[in-house]
Image (cartoon, rainbow, N blue to C red):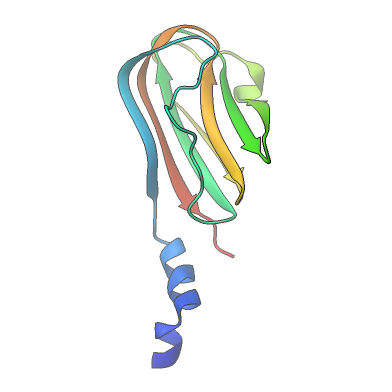
Length: 124
């Protein structure tokens, strides 16, 4: 039993059940329309994993995930393509894998009241 408790894979599995890893955060920050919100793309520490996005902007607009893999970038529009209401908080979960890098864009110039991304490792 002690050997099992010291096994790195066992420890990784156990830790993945309790960890929430902060990836990026901005607060009360002006952002330009249709440009990356974070200065560098976010990559996962575990694979597969969830990135939980908390977002609140002072203006209505559409939030988009920009996912890059193997040099190709695609857009994934959140909230079924509907505008987020101004000054309302929203949360989204996206699945991210090894090789993915993620950024966010907003369709209008706005103040990001608060935008946070945390990684929530998925149990395997």
